[in-house]
Image (cartoon, rainbow, N blue to C red):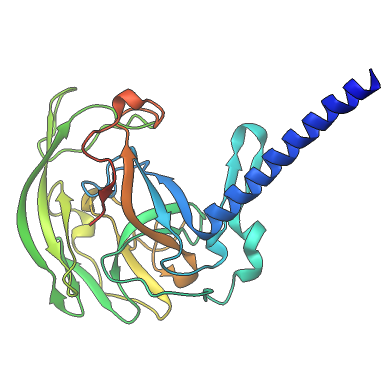
Length: 280
């Protein structure tokens, strides 16, 4: 009987050790190589849709305190910030094996105030002067190239886990109706092109002051211009402002799959045209 108990306890101990090391390996992989990211909002449409699931390449820009994960499990009262794990790397705005991001990269970064993870497009580099005039980006007093990209159409229905309705240029639109937005193709000075969406002209953020990007910081915007909280709004718990170099987490290169439903586990709602889709 004693041998049976010892064998049973030994099996449990081996299982615990296996789970422990699996978690350690997974944590190292997530910290050093790739971080999973699920798109929760519409701020990057139509480049990224609500429900897109991707892996963020952490090797692209090297490592800082922001490379460590936030661990939040509300139901168990777990709220561990990246600074709690890797705070010793914070404070000097530098990176280990640091690489420079390029204008036009789609980047996941840690919000300087709330420490939440955001995903936006990099528009302004250190030293740039950025201003939006009549909805057109000007970088160092030169307007970026803008071309007509037609329209972006989606159904007016609740989207994602937050069940929010999209905003439409042709509002009011009833449930199940066609929600339309203007699509534009922007080309940045380095030749990177991508599509943006415009809901209507003349909104507050269509005309801004001149933003001079400080050394070691970056200016980000969402592709869904009229539905994005980004560097056009001063750094607060709501606005993003300039983002320090050390707050970059990684570059988003490819969508793995995409769910149009409330959960990425609802495989019957997966979008068949977005498997392994490259991100422009």
